Length: 417
Image 1 (cartoon, rainbow, N blue to C red):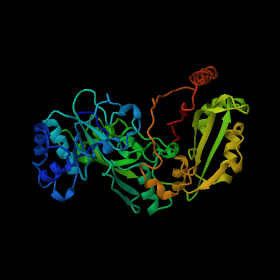
Image 2: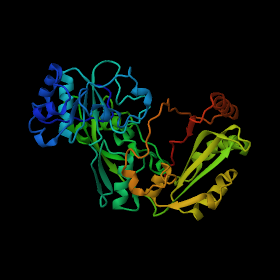
Image 3: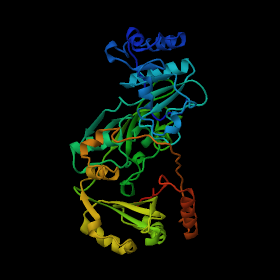
Image 4: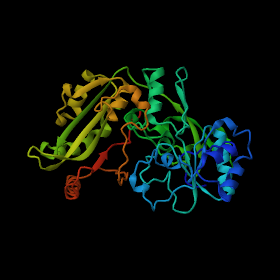
């Protein structure tokens, strides 16, 4: 099966389909559509427009709607033969069945954040893009402390819906609101709660997938091996993730956040060395990551800055003694800290506070979003980077110049009881 993040499909009646296109369907398009129409109970006429060829007026706006990297919007980048926007899991089953019949690869996009555009590119030949932008129902059960989340939902939507039901339940996953849960959880899913609760994938207790035979399966039906593989293994070769059942976790009514910037002239190198030594020995309620960016010193000359971002599951007066004990070199002050609710912290880490946004803005998947040209990569280290190694990184930053250089230091280890 083609590489998939989470997949979906949709359809409607042929007369509506023809009317929604700027030009008549080609013979190949018509045959593909007829394949979908073989399941009339799956595709009632009232569903509306779910299938787009390149001649459709809405094709390009949908294709570009969550395209995060402008490198993949060039004229020579591969484009899908069809775009399908699903409304339910039956559409996914039909998409898998017909893609196999016509030998078309499937690419599935939930949030479009993958660094190499793999959810909407395919250099091997004609393919289908299944866009999950309309497939994002969220059902939170406060009594059971669980939530069923469709694969197209964004993290911001998940967080908002949980907080709308409870001020002390949360889900441990990423810091960017527009990331889609389909790819995020299937790739592991790290975030500010992971040192206490693990990755997002560690907190999935059930899932629905469509396998290569177009069968809808839950955890029992897919078996434990496949269930293990889709939680961190990318889900790509194992089926199409339709939805996740999440185990919610407990957070206090108030958490503490801080952001502290230190330049090279202020000892950033020494601080990063110390962070590497102590980060896995901090209390599991405390998360600290480092963003390495280009900045300017007091003279206005280029320098490298380290930005320490933190979430502590407790109040300021509880955090300060911990920082004094483990990381006094950072010289954190109480006035550097803010006490927020957990849902407010989600807005804080996505820079919403800087833009004057409020919690409901977490529901907006495209707020203030502008696609950029970029190249990004994730990697792992198993031992601290030496002082000489850090200086080599700083030299590289300075040689490259520009303000768009970014490196993030984090940890995916967490303490266990």
